[in-house]
Length: 291
Image (cartoon, one colour):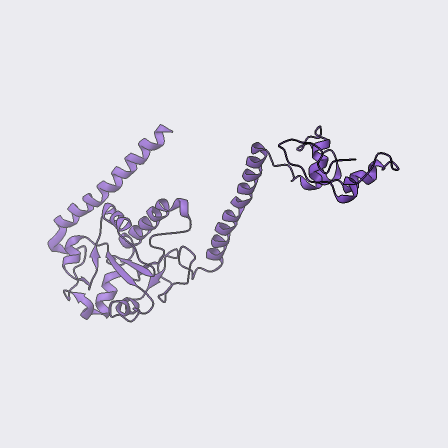
């Protein structure tokens, strides 16, 4: 008679079902298929040790119980690379979407996040957003405090002009290097910057474009993000503002660039402002020669 356990060892195996444990060699031989059908998986593995558990070959129970093969490390890395590559076009698609949005609707600010806060007019510079002296007066008087968090008024005239009268709260920045300090200052959401000079014909627009160019350069890895995405130009400059809003000027005065008493100052500040530009051109030329 079969023993209820196959081997007398320390390794434990599943016990045969009762129908197998009572089988006699004198009785009718049991077919192999019938015997296999009543064997438990543990007994099958013990009786057939030659099957490789990772081969995927062997008995049906063995195939069912064995998990699918793991991918090799190299294959996994290749799949991961494919996944990462598939993610890159999405970034490009987002940038293209922003560019398309800005091209189709120039009412969006430069990072495409929202519309311009202030009403604009068609000024002398079609690539810039211009506002009227009345709109700037509204900003200074707090009429837009519910839609903007902060504002800066950048007066690009020479110091003697600024001292002779400027918009209340304005900052005098006539040098490129001074404009760059804006990019080192903390910024706020919904903060606006307004540039101007005497007529907003040359100095103001140039400084505005310079700031935007350096801002793009600073944030080139995060396009279209900008430190100052919402910038305006005061249409017709300080002269127009003084004529319409003198009470918002400090002092209540207007000193033109070509004032007869400041011809020496004019020469001095012109040289000073151009010397920085000339230095930048030389540095750029040296950098280009290295390549």
